[in-house]
Length: 224
Ligand code: CA
Image (cartoon, rainbow, N blue to C red):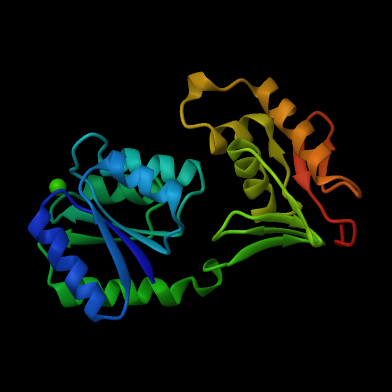
C-alpha cells in the first residue's frame, strides 16, 4: 500500500518507514500537518498514519480537511495512551482506527495490514459513469476516447459526484467538499463550475439538477 506517515518525531517516523518498507509497503514520511495536506493533494494514498500532536496543523485539523475534501482512503491515528477524548474525536472526524503511543512496530504493521484488508474496494484506480472516466492516478478525464480538460475545482466537483453516482449533493455540501476555507466559497460559485463542467462533458448529460435540492451524477444507461 502507498502510505503517508505524518509524525513530527523524526526518529519515530523513520522507524515506521523502515518497518513498513520491510512489510512490503510503499511509505513516505512528512513532519507537520501542512506538509501532510500538500502531500495528499498531490498523491493518492491508500492510508495515512497520522499523529495528533503536530506542528502547523494538528492531526485533527488534517483529518477534518482530508475527510471534507475526500482526499485519502483510510486514516490510522496515533494517540496518547490515556487520551479517550482524542480517540472519540478522531472517530467522529472519520478516522478508521487508532494506535496508542508508545506502540510496538509489529503492532503498527499488523494494524496497517488489517486496514488494508478491511476496505479492499476503496483502492479504486478510476471512477466511471457510462463512457465518462476519471483516472484517480493521473486525474485524466475522458468521455469515450476523447480527453476533457478540467480545472482543479471542476475536477474536484466531478470527483465528489462520481464517487457516489445517484446521490444528490446540495450546493453547500459540494462547497464543503471542494473548498478548504468556508470564507472562500459561495454556493453560487458551484453553479458556475457545474455549468462549465456540463459544457465540457457534453451530451448526453451526466450531471443533473435536482430542483430545490442540488446536483447528482447519473449516466444515460444507469438504472434510476
Ligand atoms: Ca507528535
